[in-house]
Image (cartoon, rainbow, N blue to C red; front, top):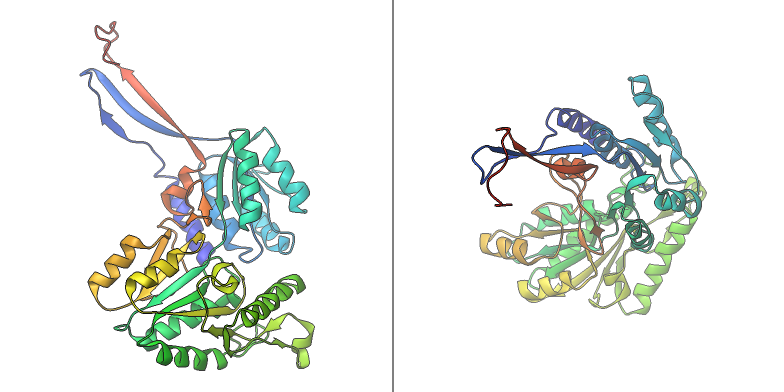
Length: 389
């Protein structure tokens, strides 16, 4: 549904692309701006949202008038292929949208380096995103990189703990934690820590892991063996650093689960803010709980990571909430709701190591794929008698 919502919203934006008018210092001059397409743009998307990611990048690029080259992740190319086929069936001229499939080290590198590609929109890891940004910017192309996250939920003593526990579990274990906005940290006031952790663990243990297409299944597999190994590595790192495993932590391999990359929803407590599981993106169903004694300490812990994508607070006091909104270093802030999610009509993206070069979705997502032109129109037809400019 998210992909459909995005397509519908950007279809309407086709009638709203425009500039702005401003009064001139000269009484006979009209000032206005225009938005123009860039030309050829490259879009590189990840495997975790094989339909929604191409939808929210390709749609604004096409509506803005560009020719688009889409490179989906090698793990999930068929959804992108079907997307292109549907657009062509709907009347999109052939050649306006081109699909290329292959390793990022070959196909992606070629797109980033090609002089005809005027802009690159990338979603993926910080390491690769940094290289994409540096290489494309070096030849003065426009670049937008949406990268990783280490997203925290802060829970204060006056929070609705049932609501907080449900939101944290949804954010941490939905999509098996394989989304950039997944909840990876729970920063909780020590006055309510024990009760909150009990509620989280009870809900995590109740999640049925299995084939996501089956009724009653609450969490599916990791994407491949490499990601499974990464998640298990971080679980061992958490143990080695002294964190307490409150639940989960094992690969599931009974019966049909042996054929996939399934792991238990995992919760660590007694986590130190400087530990690896508190600092590094895991991209799996692993939640680290950190106790704090005040809102200021919670903000220091939450801002003490290199990422700045999404953050959430569960609290009732308006002053507490607004201080969090003001001080938190994140591109997106949720109040009494999970860290995950976005809507077509509001910008999506982060700061620090989570994003650079602009926002996605909303008007900002379309404006990235345009060039801005300022027009100065003197309609008198006479020579100007001033050098005000």
